[in-house]
Image 1: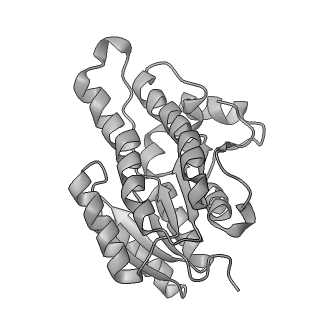
Image 2 (image 1 turned 135 degrees about the vertical axis):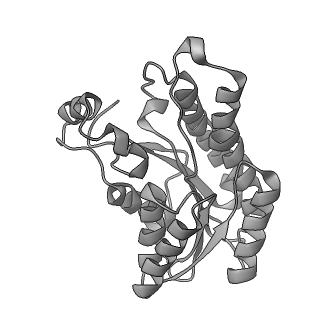
Length: 248
């Protein structure tokens, strides 16, 4: 039997890149997956099509998880379709680099409202639909949460916050048998990082990575599937770097 057979998983920001890979890996392990998207319906539909063609179960649900009313829609559509939630992957996020002199309240709130507050409010709403046997929450952080880079003070702060939230919620939700962990990718080749590919930044990161390459979405999807499954049933409150040996 597949490791996630009978489970229901929400993956936020799953229309492309890391989120899409996570959704496909969870579905391949037997989960019924809700592919959340904010703007790219076509991307989410393509993920759903790939999953269903491979014999899995998935639906696409549009919702901007920086907005509480849209989070409510995401949760209600999930429960309407599948009756419960066992796994929540808080993947939706944005980055916007700026030097100190260019930081504004808008720059700050755009990232914190989605990367941190959106994660908290989505989790708050989702755990109400977890069954008595509990489940798993996986927060997608970043290597920059532990190794902040120049011109990324706000983005790095959001990911440091994600790791802190992860530990706090692991302790708070443990009595409900809900495990909470975070996965921190290094540089991963996705649509969102296409502008870095081939650059000096890309080459430097690759040269500094012990395994000699940058990441692919599948590298992250496999690890998230592990944390979603009972293979990680005695792991909670961890922030795991998935970065080819790089420490940032």
